[in-house]
Length: 257
Image (cartoon, rainbow, N blue to C red):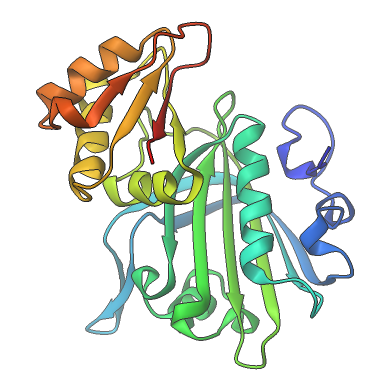
């Protein structure tokens, strides 16, 4: 079982040693760890760019609270992509929800992420070799930000931020591009049985599916039929949405071959 101390919400401080226990972080070198109390931070939820000298995001989330950040240089035998995947997947397995995810040039210039978003020049690398994700805890006002890049010298870097927020906005839900990226990479999505904002969630998911009209999916679980009806109402063709009669599993969407 993979152990990640960034998931400890009630007791225990995030520990670089436990994160280093992930397979992709074996022999990684910790370059820095910082704790900041009572700070405000803007996390991009869209591509980053600079316009007229000002940093701009297509979407963002501003929160205040306690910020813990750690940066590692990965061993030459482990890739930044593998480290990103392992941390992201583990956080999701432990109950965190993916809010935003970008890869490569879709994220915007790496130098802006390194110097302006994270204030760490060591995170600069080729734009096409970067990944970024934001996840939020399903049970507490906590946020996790992940950024990886493969630098020009071939060395992988991993940066993880754990933010214990004073509060998080209601109805946070990923954009269509993030949902589509997750479907393509993971082959499935977990769907909430108790939807906070059914119209918003169904609309965003429908937009994701309609970005790739070749995708066909199967819905399974207790609320599968309800999700299917909402997606059809939101504009997805019924022929692309199959139903699994197994209602014993968690409600999910799975990509069909």
